[in-house]
Amino acid sequence: MGTSSDRAHTRVVVVTGGGTGIGRAAARAFAERGDRVLAVGRSERTLREAADGHPRILPFVADVCEPSGPEAIVSAALEHLGGLDVLVNNAATASFADLSGLDHESVRAQVETNLVGPILLTQRALEALEVSRGVVVNVGSAGALGLRSLAGNAVYGATKAALDHLTRTWAVELADKGVRVVGIAPGLINTGVGVRAGMTQEDYDGFLAGMARRIPSGRVGEPEEIGNWIVRISEPEAFYVNGTVVTVDGGLSVT
Image (cartoon, rainbow, N blue to C red; front, side, top):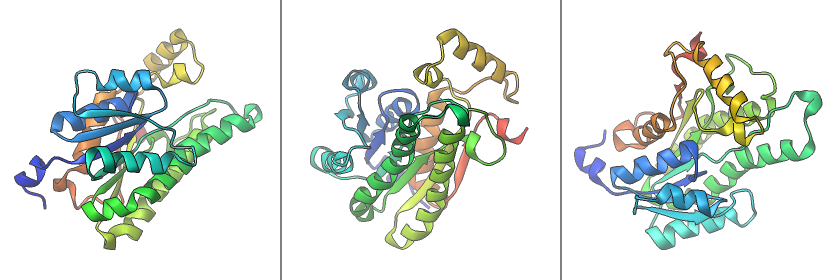
C-alpha cells in the first residue's frame, strides 16, 4: 500500500491522444497532481491547447502508428522529462459503418491506432517502466465489455475488447517485473468523437440526448471524470488493482 509520501512523488507520465477529449483531461489531471506529462498526438494545435495554462504538460507531436513513433515517444520522455512512470494508452480512432459498408482504410486505421500502437509503444516503454516499477493504463470502452453491442461499431469495439485482453495478459506477464497494468472502460463521454467520425453536430447532439435517457445516472459523462479515474487508478494507493478493467459509464452497462 502506498503512503502519503508516495502520492507527493512527482512522476513522469505519457498520455497518447493527449490533445483532445479524455486524453486532454487526463494530461491536465496528472499535471494538476504535480506530475510532468508528455502529451502525445498528431496535431500540434490541439496539443498546445491542451497544455495552455498547464506548464507541466509538454506537447509532443508523434504518431504512435508510425514505425518510428514508439521510439520517438519514449525517447522524448526519457530525454526531456527524465524517466517514465505511467503510460496511458489512450489514442484511438473510430469510423462507424455496418459490415457491408466497411472499407480497408477505415479498418486498418482503427486496428493500427487502437491496438497495434498500444502494443508497440508499451513494448518500447517496458524497460523504463521496469526501472520505475510503473503503471500502464489502457483506455478501452464500456461498449466493448461483451454485455451489449452497438450496430456500426464492430471494428472499434473489437479493438477495444482486444485491448482489455491485453490488459489482463500483460498484468500477468509483467507482474514479476514490477509493472502494473490496468484498464479504464469509459461509457458514453462527451468528447466530440461522433463529429470527428463523420456525424453532424446536430446528429451527435441528438445521439447524446437519446442515450442520456437510457443511462441510470441520467446524463452522459464528461472527459474530466474519466481523466480523474485514470489518475486514481495509477496512484500508488491503487497498487492492488492489477489486470482489472474499471467501468465508468453511469451504470449503462448493467441495464
